[in-house]
Image (cartoon, rainbow, N blue to C red; front, top):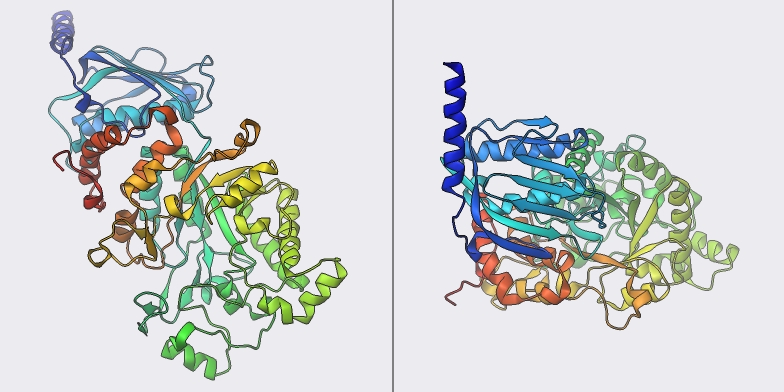
Length: 564
């Protein structure tokens, strides 16, 4: 009797599978973003049912469990993962795949195979498989009675090694759960880097145990300007938040499981008002009061200053003269101490040290800074900034880390091992690549997701300015034609930047990044010669159903519907 039950179960399974053997699929079944390098559609669909099992090598257990959990939730079934080769969904390592992030995906009516050179490639294959599933699986109640996957053969690999998204949590703070959601979006789009901007004039967001005032004082501002800079008033509301070191560990571990590298940014020598408010000796002039543009300071801030505390966390946006003093050894001791606590939290080989928008006015009149210029044989304050960056680079190199800096670090001479992030157009990136320095392209005209998304600014949420549409992002080419073939090798990739002066909520961030992030993901992953706006837009029309199911607040007007 037991044998008969087993035979009947096997017969039913085969019958159900055969039902999907000759099913014809259409282009709309393959709305994959970013577009794969090579894809061949096929007849048939794989049915996820009670006989579905995921199996693979022990080293792929995390990826296998991720896939099993995803399919199980989508089908309302218990889909197991096991080591070995007994499952009808197989995860494999394949040394014949040359690209470190490449993968192969084969879906037939009765089996699925995902291969990668390593676990990261297998994970990207899983993300592609995810996009072949109905969008409804992404919702909380998304399980389906009959879950099928269209047959396909894909061979895929990324164009660039660096595919990043940045998030400024210093102007506005976002909770741990949202940071995880942000990382999930990075993974969905097969991007691999999260650039976490943690310190600014308006807030210090990471716990440093040796310097508790950084979070006790530096993480809070007494108020924030209302409207566009320089503002029409101050909202008079205390604002703050920071991540404990345990929060950071949790986020980094979460990202690691999704093969996303987290790069911390500790801004220096400019954009340092919050740290100076906590420890005024870091300023060239500790007794001089913090100035808020157009006298837009909060009443509380004015009262604190009147009571004898001149330094406060900045309450408006912009660039400020009060920066770290380059002439005091105490400044470097402080920053080294900070980095000594930051470094163990982030496995990334990089630490981003900022280096942008550092006015030199205070250095010009600071006796300590002028003494430093003389002692080091420097010509001017630009070379003093280069000295500052190179001194910090040497320290980080001694700890096994490399630095990334905004393109201003080119001024006065580039630090020997620095990677340049080119944001003021492409000139800085071109110059750095010609000097044989690694470059990450993130020019404002194509990669700044704090810009408006249409000409109709009156009907858009407040933004910093500019206009960068989804089409503008998609049209971007990260590798400049001005570079020789050898110099082009130093262009590691590109990144989308999300500065949050005007983004106070998580919904606001989602609106500003989506679907521009989707366009950028294809720019940095897919073959340049295969780029086609109409094709991308057709896939995006379907892809946004997934964003809807995930409950994301994307900019719907940015999706050009087929009927338009």
